[in-house]
Length: 397
Image 1 (tube, rainbow, N blue to C red):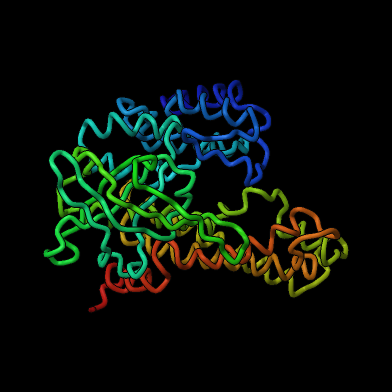
Image 2 (image 1 turned 120 degrees about the vertical axis):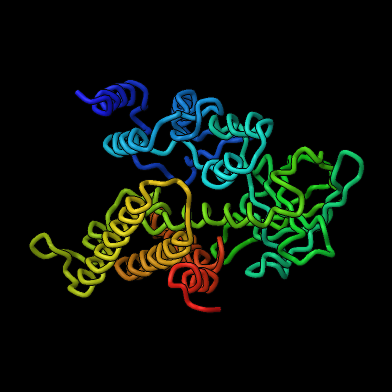
């Protein structure tokens, strides 16, 4: 028996013993675990599952053990992912620390920063948010104006950010600030970390068309932050910012593979049969059959392309410009998912509140509206197409 086969057997046995039964069923949005100082576990088993996976380091299986990670190689991590899928296990933790900040700290952070922040990310003890976009500095992110001025051993930060996802719930922020206003805009930016409970930090949720408020305006008024919280070199934060965006776009591309639908255990086929009827076990409406089949074919092609890309890169964890390609297509595919869902549900998908609709029916139009933002967040689709043209296709500026 190979070492990898032994690892699979041990992993399977551990998961069977330690993954609670309720963590092997589809979870609602309310049961998503973000971690942090103020986490409220809707399901007690979610807390137990996070603690057990965090203790193993398997919330971040390939991170080094010295920083709380699992220390697995790529082949072992693939086995773990397969075994988690086999038992339909929920993700123990959803975290911007895992998907965005952690990888750049491993690459750019100093030893003190890694020791301080990475183990807390692994265990879900700190919830992070991202301070990038500003009013007037969205797609042209490098034009940001939030200032950080040296004052002794500290920076004094003034400015504002917008579309800061879950800033009102986050414990810490990774933030882009301008440290040299006279330098060319890409060269005067630094990357800094600080506690959202620091004096002078305030947030204001933004209500979206979907009725939810996942995004916030974030304001910094004379916020004093230790200079040791600077990641990398002063005025060289743009390289870190771009690297983190690649990780973010890889994360967002996963929406196209169903990441946004964790609350529904019904397949498109099942929903179509429920709302449009069936004949001899098939969806009654041939147009719906065609739309669903085409969507599934596109999804399978997308999944195979992502897998091929990973294999061509020898399973490298380092994202590349292809992350823009996957982000673009993944968000378009996710938007199409909700377009098809609305068509197959018909008028049942038009409820907003009141009686006569199930909880699922009342939520689907909000999810459809929310999906429209996929082509904006993490870099607009137009930005991704520009990156693809330059970095993937090699077209001239």
